[in-house]
Amino acid sequence: MPVPPTSGPATPGPGNSIRLLPSGIDPHKVKRSFARAAGSFDDADFLQTEVRNRLLDRLKWLRLEPQRVLDLGAGTGKALPALTAHFPAAELIALDLTEDMLRVAARREGASPLVVCGNASRLPLADASVDVVFSSLMIHWCTSLDSLFAEVRRVLRYPGVFSFATLGPGSFRELREAWQAVDDGAHVMHFPEMAALGTGLLQAGLAEPVVDVETLTICYPDLRQLTGDLRGTGTTNPNSSRNQGLTGRRTWERLEAAYGKQRDANGALPVTLEIVFGSVWAKPPGRKVSQLRDEKSSRSI
Image (tube, rainbow, N blue to C red):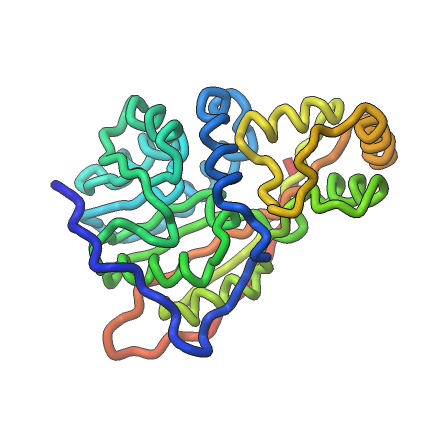
């Protein structure tokens, strides 16, 4: 079944627009980073796999028989086989910003998705054409979450659901603190607050958002392995104000020393990751959107 043509992206109403992320994110840098990482992503995506699997587990409680499922920010398509198994009767769309990632996704065994290259803030889909929007660790890369949420609301049809996971503001706390001991540059991107996400979803016209957070801790033997995994998955600094030059030896040594002060009892470098999970529904016709419900939990791996 072909994807219906778009009727144009929705835009937030006057006075309702909120900016959940700093405007300094350069979308061209984001696209280039993930294009370069397409070949190495599957070998370095420990974090992405852990979060993706936890988000997929949450779909087990979903009582829907969707006609169309959208994997928003599909990357190399690792969620596609599980989505196919969970929704065998649904048409599956894999959408990503980079063609390089989608070439890998198109070859993924266990799924036959319709592959679409597009921008999450301007979805090439018709109004009310999708029943489930699944998005794992993508939305914090968007320059404007108000535009993203408006687009999700536009393409999601009742009683569809938007299920997502994103990094929260506590993520990479140790790396951020280590860089602050070195210089005043913007080395680690900022992530959206949980309360702001819930507010943004409501303002976009979606219903009954439920947002909760899980804290994961990954331990690395050294800084080079950590930065290697970040580069391998395209998780690089997208700030337009960042220093464009390479990190010099002296700067690197200072960073290693600053981060080394945070080693745990086993001598490993901890990486704290705050994972915000959320679900929100297409607004029922003629009903008001309910208030946000928050649930918090913490886990360590």
